Image 1 (cartoon, rainbow, N blue to C red):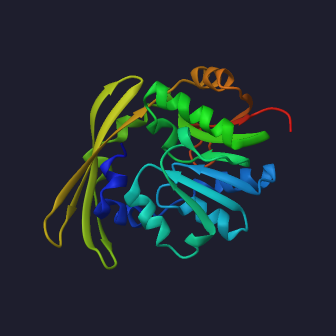
Image 2: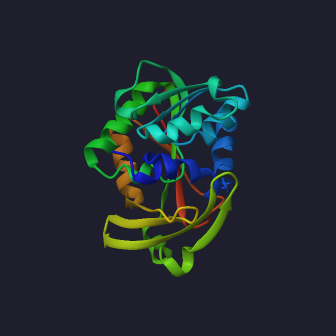
Length: 243
């Protein structure tokens, strides 16, 4: 079940305008080039920003996401016909052989259930060609990112063309490590409607992630610092084996 932030049509429609800085995707574009990937599976593609960036570069892209409202936004964007969109998750994909599978932003951490996490790792492995790579990021638990998830640090009022003015903020609900739960609140000033979206992220330790990858048939080839958030996030690169 996708969070309301991604599944509610009104919230999905404002996701991109409120999250305009996607410089984090530069890391994935660079890795795509570094690996020479021409076929990419974007797991948790959301509103399609990264998938469409890749498609514009002539890369064959499949985007998969469980949130139908987010996929509807993606499919309405220019160039969307160049991407294969799948409503679902990585545990049950049609047959494919891609060079690279990605989970950008919070996707890996948002898969909190151990069985779902295992299904995602297995599903990505089946979708990858021999020698293909899985790349994703997670926050470093010791840096306690959740300490800044409060109204004072996050409150803002934004005007969105065609949609009006939206007030939003985030508040921490619970920290029961490795799980952290928080709530986004959105107030639409045009009609006063207030919508909330609760999310939970799993903060896995580096050694736990490496062990999970090995257990699911991967070789960890590199663990990098996220260039856009130095010292705050890991970027994992794992390979399925010899080409």
